[in-house]
Structure formats: structure tokens, C-alpha cells
Length: 236
Image 1 (cartoon, rainbow, N blue to C red):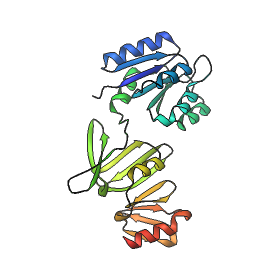
Image 2: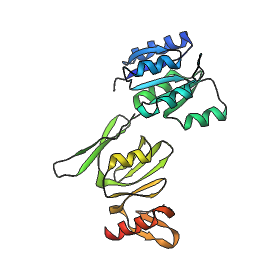
Image 3: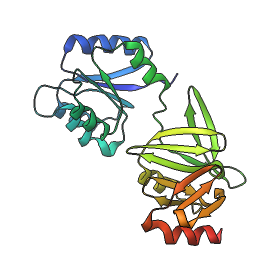
């Protein structure tokens, strides 16, 4: 199990104390407990946790959604904790950098499973001896090595990316734009605002339907990407 350095942001002292005890019993380190947004921001100027447990309804100025927005550029995984079940709050949380949304009261086993089974993945590539780039993705408790040539395509949904590969599918908490920057490899090309393809994996080009075929999957070609996609595929 990976040991996490966790920050708790919760204005219910008894609930926060219970969380701290459980997290410590599970082998994690609780860096501190705060009940307002400014204290969190001050702390993050000096230290960076690997996870923030963040209540949405807080005393004082900022609520949890606003705090998440303030720290979004730090790419720290966040788990929201809230008693609110309205659609407006849930939709706002989905647009944030949070990895999950727990409605109070929740089973602590659910929190434990989120912490211990979630990848909290950051994309890191390396180069093997034969100059083939590769990275590692987490699947359950295993770190799986995937070479760039094994990646077929990537589909994004807001701040998440589904990476479809020859050896399985993986999910990263990262935007497609940022992932493309980190891939930085000429074989990967954006074909649609929600898709990036590996041009070496393309099996067919259906221009009349504005689609690419990779294996048995048809992937859309966006109008703004059409010219570059066709040129790159024809050159490959």
C-alpha cells in the first residue's frame, strides 16, 4: 500500500478527529486539519500533500469548491466530503480537480478503498534501452508497464482520460491537453477535441463518415483536425 500524506479540511471537529484516527490506523500520515480555506492555502505554500479530504460546506469565506479551484494548478487529488446531494453542487464538483465525491454519512471502508485502490496517477514517461518510451499505469494494486507503441488511442471526459492500449484500458486523472503535452511524441495526434490517436495504430480512414478505425473502434475526426489527421496518416 502506498502511504499518503493527507490534509483534512473539515469544520466538524469530531468528524475530523475520527477521520484522522482511521487514516493513521490505515498507515497514512495526516499532515494537519483545517476548518477554513485561507488556512489551507497558507499551508500549501509550504508543503504539498498527496491527497486532500475536503468538506464542501465550510465556515468562513471559501467553500470547498472554491478551495479546489484555487489549488487546481497544483494537481493534488481531492476527495470531496459533503452532506449536499443537490445536482448543482454535484455538477460543480465534477468540473473540479476532485477524484471522488462522498455524501455524508459514508462508510469509511469506501474512503479506504478510494485511497488505497485509486491510482492518483501522474503521467511519467521513461525510455528503455531500445529507445522506446514507456510509462506505468496503476491497475488495482499493480503498476503495469505500457510502451508508447502499445497505446492505441485516448478518450477524454472532462478531467479524466481513458487510455486504450494493447494490454488493457487505464484511467488517468488529467486533462487531454495536459496529457498531450506530457506525451510529446509525434505518433500521437489529436483527431477530435475528445480524442487523441496513435497514427501507427490506424487501420482505416473513413473520410465520408469523418472517422478513423483503430481495431474495431471508430473514432471521430473533428473538422478543425481533419486536414492534419489525413496528412499524418498518409505519411505514416
